[in-house]
Length: 234
Image (cartoon, rainbow, N blue to C red; front, side, top):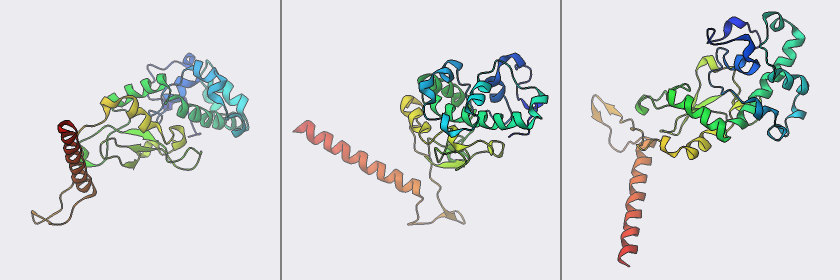
């Protein structure tokens, strides 16, 4: 992540060195999952509460994030610069985790979700359901970023190009807050269960977890319907 060069940006034609550090950082290869945090959000000390003591070069890192200029190749070869850059990357990631659960951040992530930027569920029977990034811990260095499928509600390993993204950059709560904010994006249909067969014949008395869940949901809906009818007749 720290052996960088300006040639590693994905959108070289659209990127300008005068765009600032944040657009440059988000345009790096493997950083597609990031939303561009608005400078106004970064400058609000309320949004940064509790972060200062977690970084050795906090002030310099924050200054780098808010810089109106992108790093040059000479900067990226300087060891002292890279020490600050390391803190800036982690600081931006933790700010990002807070930003994406704010109204503006959720909107930015919604656009990425609809475009399929976060990828699709690796489970074949989820029919390429769009996924959401998430972490398994709020602490840095605890786990890499994962992807969550809203259809089968399972967590999967992200693509190898995202292996250097920390899960703390997205947080544990983002998928749930996102789907609660945009309930129409929650899949209405349950994922198709895998039906085990031997030589084309279905194996009886053997059900997948999804099939069991689907059966349980049907029973609960049936009970709810009976209760509603009893209340109406009562």
